[in-house]
Amino acid sequence: MEQIQRQSRLTTEDIVRLMGADPAHIAAVLSGSQFPSRHLAGRFARTCGADHNILLKVWDDEHERRNASSVHGADETREDAAPSQ
Image (cartoon, rainbow, N blue to C red; front, side):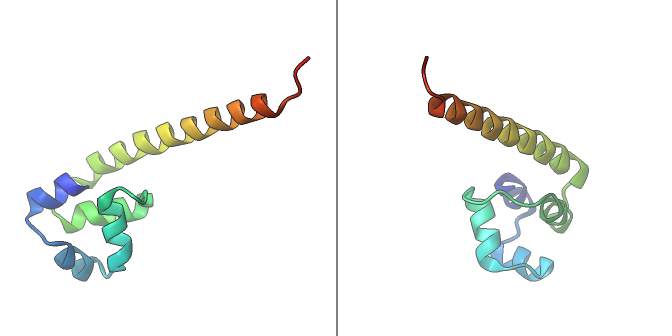
């Protein structure tokens, strides 16, 4: 999303104003400390003049990767908690 913002030449303040979004939330998403909702990602792309379908495909892939990682991590935690025989 940061790359899309750079290419749009919009400031974070411009994006916040145009989207009517919370400045702290947008800053957290752009810094990578918070994963955006799919809806926000689409709105962000349209606001910046980018192809929202491409960004949403990237979002879907990253969301799937994150879910797979969290499931894998949960499996490891359960294995660690299981009594050894």
